[in-house]
Amino acid sequence: MMLQDYLDSMGIAYRLSSHGTAYTSQDLAAQEHVTGKKVIKPVLISVDGKPCLCAIPANYRVDLMRVREQLHAHTVELLEEAQLQKLFPDCEIGAEPPVGKIYGLPTLMDTSLLSDDQVTFQAGNHTTSITLSMRDYQRLVEPQISDFSMHA
Image (tube, rainbow, N blue to C red; front, top):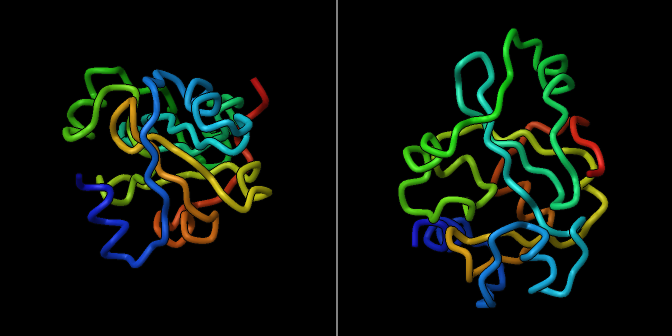
């Protein structure tokens, strides 16, 4: 698995979990027995025609207008599912990890994630997840941090 190899090569300490099928980030939170705020949901967007990964808590949603304003972009829109398969060829649709760097994508992380010391996210499929420290997540992803989401 590309993600685990990347984590190992970066010397990141993480916990790999197997669980029942989780099709949404909120399902993953329930499977892992944590709040939705501790699960990172990746939202794939297009910013002026270029793909970008947004990392937000599972119980939040992206405010596309805020993203557009903060990035000084002309257009910001959600990517179509067909585009996800091209960008994440080794992942199941809907189970993309919020680690844009290994897929050549910039990552925009919402400030609401900063309050948690540990985070969990899908590991590329619907039955495996990764938990690691927020400090390691930031080191791994090198995100641009901004306030662009709202509680769902």
